[in-house]
Length: 186
Image (cartoon, rainbow, N blue to C red):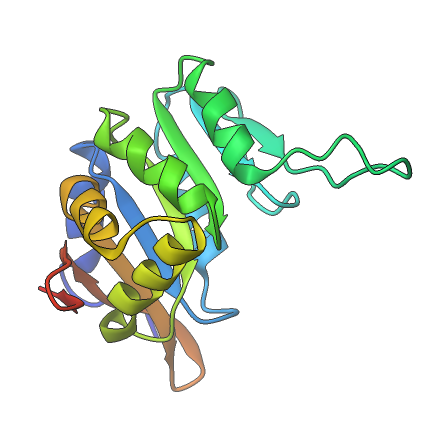
């Protein structure tokens, strides 16, 4: 059983080639990181990847940056949102956040909205219908008002690729354009 339905692979390749900003969404073990690694491998550009821990399979010219916890003295922490800010100073062609799960959402959306096209991230969500509410919740965790979260998503995220499992196989369930009006996707 194939990972893509008819036309999905070509549509995703077109989105990648046109430098669309993508969110890859799905539940645990649906293939988000695997698909993200494959997409990064398709671009021969300077991709700066921000991860909590090393999971993405990267080859040069892609570069990885990793979060760091406090040391024994309680200092030295480096968070994902700090890494996104630092990545902006590294002349990236694309920025990738391995998993959006908190305050890094605000910084990532601002980077996408300010012209860092072709950026990508993964997001935990069980379905396309749940993605808008998940994004609103993460926006809230990042300290953003609902209206600002909606504006940033509408202005910066070009497509959500939803992954899932059908008959025990990982699959692309759908690809949609997020339109944050009353938490819906088109």
